[in-house]
Length: 191
Image (cartoon, rainbow, N blue to C red; front, side, top):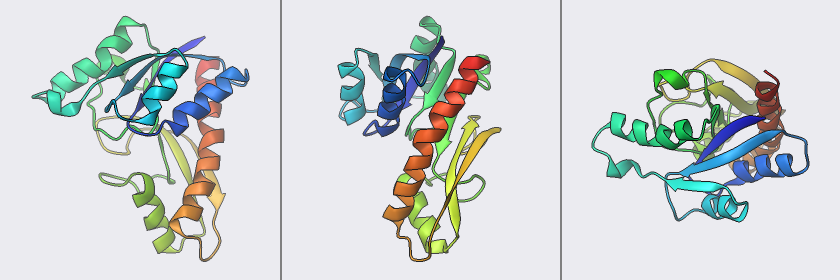
């Protein structure tokens, strides 16, 4: 079974979706670690309630990007994590060579549209709504050292209607995310 660490920065909705898929046996992965950039987020409580080891790593406690990177991946290495799954994790972390193509992220748009530094969460959905495009979706990709960059694994599209506001876009994209991330994790588990 695939051993994963899930990295979060907020409410844990994506973590919760993954755990729900695991509990209903629709997804065979072992979420053995949750790493959060903050202790004061609902996602930490979700992990602890599920009996998953949690670690809080705050970027501000490290003098260098390399020191931060080393601490983010230290426990992952110790636990034999095969993939790091970013689930609303908002901090930029350098990817060490031993985790190349072993860190994945989900972004709430169809990369390369509406992505890059500062483009996350509702900022993305507002930009999509403001643009008037007829489709959006989510992208799951391997993470490299650039924002919203790295080889794309899978994209799932959602259709938008004229007049959709940012909240409408968010709701439609979240449904796609709940389907797409477990699908990709299942692929990784299957090799």
